[in-house]
Length: 184
Image 1: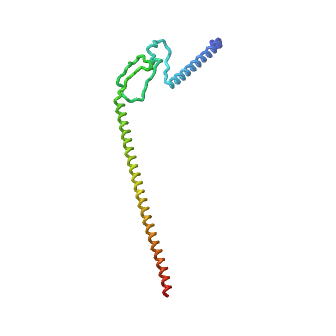
Image 2: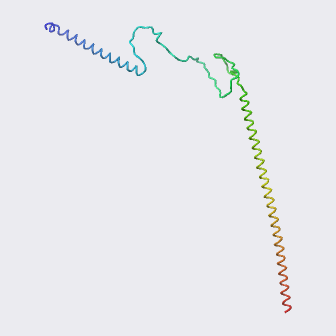
Image 3: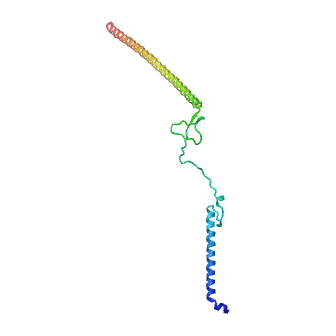
């Protein structure tokens, strides 16, 4: 015990230093665990740093592309008959890049022209039928009107004839009345 009393201050200092070292060690371990957990959340893995050859560990995927790339697209659905350029060729504005097979396009144009022609012929036929129907309706109306006018004229003639007969009958009745008065 004498030893402890004699060296009390250095023992306390060593104990405090050991406690500080332990405390710092636990803080570092906790921090490393937190960093490791955060790295795992982002899909990374943590490893202890050591001297090693890094050329075997780095792997990158991607697409290497020129800065002067131009995409050429078209709405045409025709097949390419002849390709005039190869991959990597330098082309200028106005250069013919490819020639399309125009047979399918020509066939489509011919089919559309045929449909248009048939539609025009059908339209013409329908117009002729409509004009013929209108003409027949006009003829029927004219014939009907003429027939009715003839009936009206015939009825007017009958009325005039009946009026004449009525006038003659009145005249005869007046004549007979007068004669009867004379004979009385």
